[in-house]
Every structure is written in structure tokens, then in C-alpha cells.
Length: 164
Image (tube, rainbow, N blue to C red; front, side, top):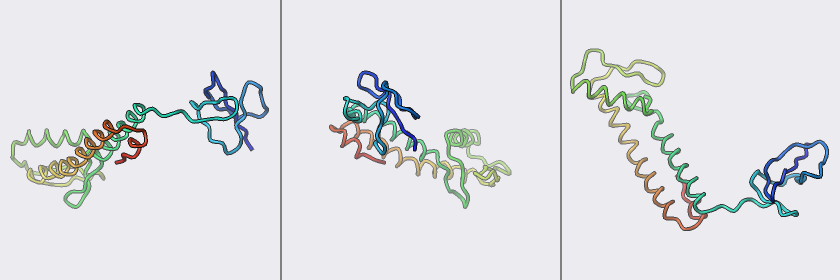
């Protein structure tokens, strides 16, 4: 069975290593004891770092942003198939609609996620853009609502309770 030791500098775990023989410079970690870099060691026991409200808020705000980004860019079902909806695709739809100016050229098509060309009219391409907007707008409102609640929270526990 592997044994682990903590390298402790000024009372803080700075590294965790696998050891084959003890070294007085290391603190042996008892089996099944959770310890991570950044934890404190007082000579007797390991303790996790104290979470600050500001630090937890920053982490939770970033989590809301990354969750929103993932959901906003997820492929979308439309016209019996699924289309990409990443930033590039959304931008390209908008630019194409502007360039078309309401006209529908012969053989207007858009490619779905399986790289199959789907013929559509200008109105159908507008519908794809509208479907993406209709899906993303509630996501954006949810993100902004959650972020406001995170900023207003007064305790670490209150911030951690705010989930997507």
C-alpha cells in the first residue's frame, strides 16, 4: 500500500508525495485522511483552509459564467435536426441574414452537427436564429439573477447554496 507524506512549510501543506521510507522532514499522512495542498498543519492535525466570502463568491461567479457559456453554445434542435450554436455559428447566421437582406437565394442551406446540408428558406434561417435566441435569453436572465444573488450573499454557505 502506498504511503503519502505532506511537505509542510510554515504550517501549510505545500506538496504531497508518495514515500517508500519515512523522512523526518515530511509529515506522514495517515491512511484514509483527506489532505490537500493549501491545508494547514499545526503539528498534530491537518485542517482545510478557511474559505473567505470573497474567494467563494469569485469561484461561484466563474461557475455561473462557465455554466452559461456551455449551455448557450450547446447544439440546438430545429427543423428535425440539430445545428451548432457556438459563437461562430451564431455570428455567421446573423451575418448571413444581414447579407441576404430578406432574399432567399436558390439552394440556401445550413449545415447541421453531422455536417449534412439542410436546405432552408431565409425565413427558416431566421427561425434558427430566433430558436437560439429563445433558448439563450432565459439562460442569460438566470445567469444574471444568480450572479446578483451571489454578490448579495453574506455568508460562504449562502453563496455555496446558489447553484444553476
